Image (cartoon, rainbow, N blue to C red; front, top):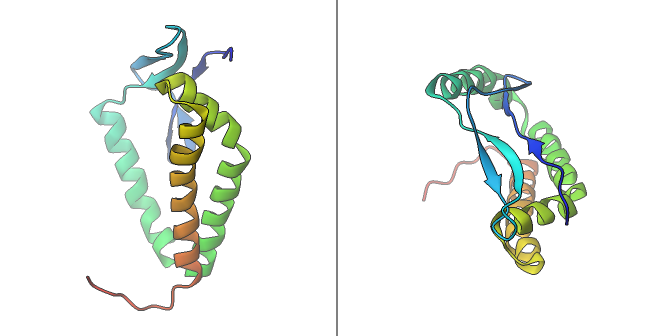
Length: 129
């Protein structure tokens, strides 16, 4: 596969943002630069943490069924990008398509679906282990 190099940005407070520094993600088989990846600074991390703290009250006050809808949408979007994700894993990490699909993709998709179903079925009980 031939890739057009992509520039990845941080997503903070609802906006994509450039970083002060980046590093190259390189295809180990071809030495081709696949992406410019954020090398976030402490200042940028602090902004992301502050944004998450500000968003938490709204998120935590959503009813579980509403949170479940967001998580289901996220799972649907990820599913629609499966081939792109698998290709990126193959080119970025040198994995086989089978491993990238059956292990990497499925593990992430299973997490989305698990969180979706747990929120959908949440009845207010907390079980401490």
